[in-house]
Image 1 (cartoon, rainbow, N blue to C red):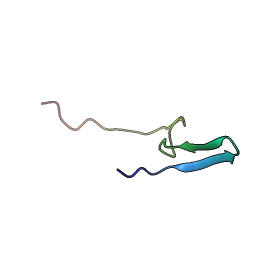
Image 2 (image 1 turned 60 degrees about the horizontal axis):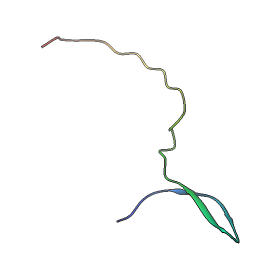
Image 3 (image 1 turned 120 degrees about the horizontal axis):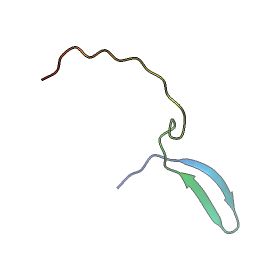
Image 4 (image 1 turned 90 degrees about the vertical axis):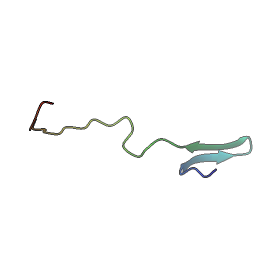
Length: 38
């Protein structure tokens, strides 16, 4: 399997990778319009 991630830090004990989406934890604002109710 392959995973996309960002190497956050590396030292003699190991490495820390961040596999979250780049927008994870950020606020998002958007507008929506309801065009139909089924």
